[in-house]
Length: 202
Image (cartoon, rainbow, N blue to C red; front, side):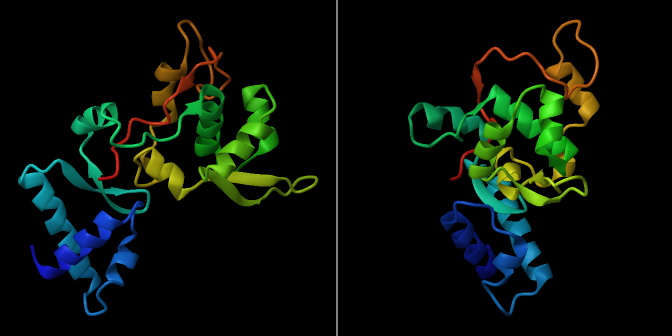
């Protein structure tokens, strides 16, 4: 690897979060954007071709070195890594509605779910998975919510366009014999569900 690729590797290894390309470029003022991208490509190819246990992944608006998925379970079983915080079924349903309908207000989310969502939205906001992105034009100008880069990171997405299409979710979210909006309320069994089966930081 060239010296720029090694520099980027060191920065990515030390970071607990995805680093945007612009931030990586600031590590070497003399490196052009094309040189930075070339170094990232070289680094990613190095991990892929040489069969490393980690990979360079483009996710959450930046780049991060992550454990390969096939090794995640063994590492977690040995308690060498911390799993992402678990989300309840109610939190996942609320987060899905916000992800697909954003920007969206609390009242609209509550109408879709059929229950009050104030506490769930507060929790998702505290976790940094959603944020206020504006205000509606209606009475009282209620707050509108949208997902954050932390949401993309937790679910291993580069951008929102990588979310499954809503029609693809119908089969996954619909109970046998159930029809209609796949984002309509789905009866919860009260169990908690893992936020995502994502790779762990190296």
